[in-house]
Amino acid sequence: MRLLQHYQRLSLAFPAHDGPARLADIAAALHCSPRHARELLQSMAANGWLRWLPGLGRGHPSRLRLLAPAGQLETEAVRAHLAAGDIEKAMRLLPTAARSQVAELLPAYLGVSPAEPQTLRLPFYRPLHSLDPVRINRRTECHLIRQIFDGLTRYDRAQGQIIPALSHHWSHDGAWRNWRFHLRPGVAFHHGRALDGEDVRQTLLRLRDEAGPHQGLLSHLEDASLPAPLTVDIRLTRPDALLPRRLADSAASILPRECRPQADFGRFPIGTGAFKLEANNDYRATLRAFDRHWKERPLLDAVDIWVVDDPEVRARLDARFCHPDEPAVRPSLRQLEAGCSYLAANPARLDAAQRQALADWLHPTVWQAALADEPALGMLPQWRHRPAPVQPQPPRLPSTLRLVTYQLPAHIELAEAVARRLRDAGCRTALTVISYPDFARYDWRDDADLLLTGEVMGDDVDFGVYQWLCQDAGYHCWLEADARQRMRLAAKNLAVEADAERRWRGYETLARALVEEASLIPLRHHQQTMEFSPQVRGVTLAQCGWMDFGKAWLAPSA
Image (cartoon, rainbow, N blue to C red):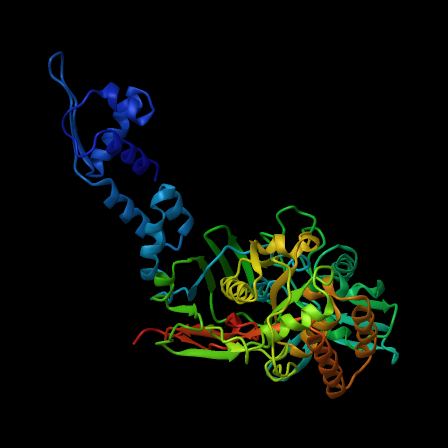
């Protein structure tokens, strides 16, 4: 690769050259000594890139003839690296301005590999954020965390219930406060060490004690102790019938105790999951099958997620997440997300009457926005908690409002539409779009008037709705005192409700109150669509919209 870079420099200094050339000038162009320049010229000539005839004696100048266009050699080298699956080397080979070439070439290399190993290659529009389970709550990262890690328990979508994972059996004292979990023997982390109870104990205490988006998940953990090396006792400060569901959450994934303090653990995490993370940078993330997984080895050997944000390129790939406006021309799976995008207003800036008027102004029967997806009348698609207003009037709002959202194309599009709608009411909207890690810190909230965010449930929709209502969802920061107290009381009562039907009735009562009082304003339910090559078999969608990598496999082309 370095020799090609030297040839690139030579081509810039002597474009399409065919004639006399002084060795000293060539050495200056290559930023090296004349002796090293002579060696480089010999190597380039051996590759057939140029002809170099050194001058013999005074009055006989050297002659240089460039035979290969540097751009052609760049493209050939880039193709070779892409064929080997090494997008990093392909990117480093090109100057920044020319890296769009890689995007143009990707369709030939992304997707189903024609031969072994079984490597599925997918595009994604951005690099991954941290994969440290306690620090991230974005759905893509949470899905990948579930591939890399295991929890004590796991939610099985087909059975619709919690099943054993790293813990093969558990029990409680009948009052839901003291629990005992028995760990599987012989479970290995990706770096080779066996799992033991101390890993579990330290993981749970860290989840309770370390500030982050999931700290409320186990805030009632009093202690975790080890009566035996593979037995973990959990003592709670209050009854909780939902503890096995909490422990199936991606945030409760079990970490090796010696690796978690490492500064780069979020970028290169180590778990016990069916896939181990092999690469993670600005261009690619690679998950490789873990042969020693306690349950079963995946059918795929690897999953490559390459960062591609060019819509035309993505449309030609072997598997992609489709925008709602894009027609799927190959096999595809669709589902309406369990959740919605919504707006919330800062009660310090907009009073209750203004929030109600704003919700009416944005009601789908009044607001004829030319947007894709399904209009939302409640937090979930099956809920209809926002009746149509009788005679909606433009809300009386401040002349300017600051609306904050994060870098998700669907949210940016929706935020821009909201801004146009508020302009019709005489209110100018200053839209601020920030990265998700910055957004998730919420240190901007005191200076903002409106928040546009969203929530999509994981496979365990029951517990996902509980978390959205009772823990730290985006709108919680702007709940007024009465609503906040109501949520705290409901969280305790629902946590000891073992009957799922009664829990759901409690969820709906809470959700209806939030929407009717305009603590949050539902806007859109997004349609999740994945299109894929016919060679990709066993495709199922997780509730978050991603493919379940553990069930996919690649059939040979016909």
